[in-house]
Image 1: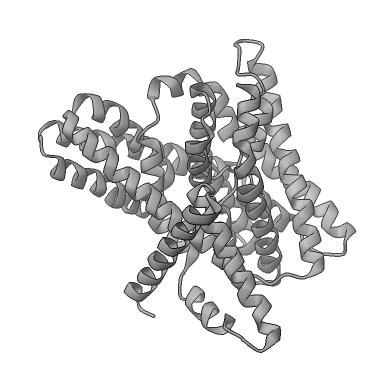
Image 2: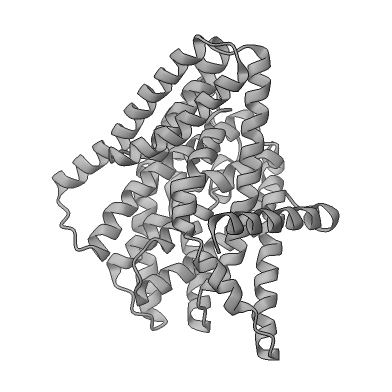
Length: 409
């Protein structure tokens, strides 16, 4: 299938699944379309023993879609920019210490905890996954996914402070998590020698370089926006910032996700207030909200269908179930320690530890990173347990986080 046919099929499936969800399930759209996609995939698998094998054609189509390329080098730039566009910088500054700690030290701590606990458990049930590969899983599953988080928060009605904490952390720890993943996976699969100096330089180049690049690119776009008053031109400029800026950041080997988030914060705050008319703001918001909703729905349909490409057995399902517990434990520890110390200096929202723990959703980015690993037996184990954690995170945590927020607000 060519690119147009694949795009047409995905959009058609997404539209049909959205319609079914709206008419019957009435779940939040992203969760609903993913659930329908999962059920469709499972139906195809159940029909196979009855002599009706449609999985060959479905697998061929899915294999022609590079999930990692589609998300990490396509959809992600649009989704991160759309998410950052509506984050208030003043609110973000008020929560800067908690967000900074969770997005850096929290991700590192969670990676280590998940890696160690998973290694011990897999040895216990007879799966020999080397410790370094367990750390690879820890690095790809520890960052909360901004796409999943932002999609769910829209319907959760969280207070402003909580929404800022969850949104801010998920936007920034995504970039940090990818940097950690690249380091550990490069060491595990690529035989890269890692020293303290190389790690520091890599972090500075990727994370700090991405932030600086995003600030410069956002500043140039802001200056151009101030000199025009035409919403078509201004929306095109933001599109150029997202697509061209993301591509250029990757070419310069700085963190493109962090660059897009910083640029989005600049345009969403200074750009909206100082460089746009009311008409432009209305059109810009409508445009990026539509882009966000459509791409989110397509992405979650893809997540639901990707189960056809994953091989499961009883042992891997047990490992996946325990991995859910491990990831939640690591999240609780990495959240509760900084919250404990910060509450000594300022008051935080009631139940913030429980909400941040349960609201730390994992999504498409974790699946994309797992799929980006080179083919090997270790990759198949990591991919299977990653999928278990992601499905639980979106379906169970995503559907219940609203009730937890209401309990404490």
